[in-house]
Image (tube, one colour):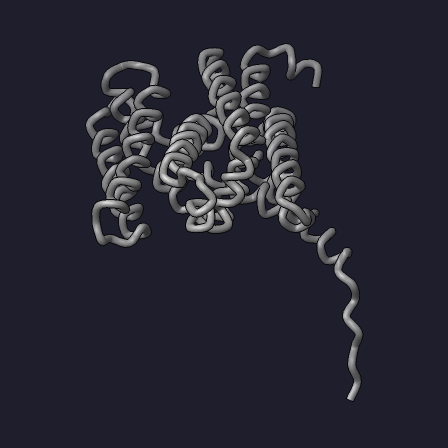
Length: 275
């Protein structure tokens, strides 16, 4: 463990995991409750076009990924408000279009085809200190937002109509949440990759829901599950020479199975009935 912490790249990997994994867990509580998992998939897959743009321009891909992800997210909102298309149709359309554009871009970047695997499945060991700093800034914004707007967010998650009647600006609150969620997903691509990024938005909240009885408990437990998944996944990746993203996801799945067992143990035994 000590030898792992000596390596600068492992220090950065642990920091980015500590920042983004619990953040995904907390946001995932609202994502799963509002059935927005497909939205995060759309943003993540659409960001492949941003990767191609960054490589073509020879710049840090973090910024094109953020830019394209925000464009995809805002297009989802705009098309939902200004067309008669179903939300699932809009997201499938945008995800397919932007991802196809990214694949076409990679086909023209002959010297970068090997980079595709890194972005699809994550490469947390390649993150730099600017990535860590950006993750810290986004983490701070999200935590401040959730602390100050927790009650309206909970009410909006329960019923947007009820939140509107109570005086909450549903449209503005929803826009802020979508933007923060999009930034978190875009940054987490380095952690887990385009294919696996949604797992940290779904598995920790599902784990917490197995044992939590209130929203605050669910938020706290989801944060802890995300944190443990990130730290233990990075450590397992270093100790057993495993790909980091899948190691984090498998750790999260292991915690889910433990919570599932705890849920069944807490359930009172059903009385058997004999004829």
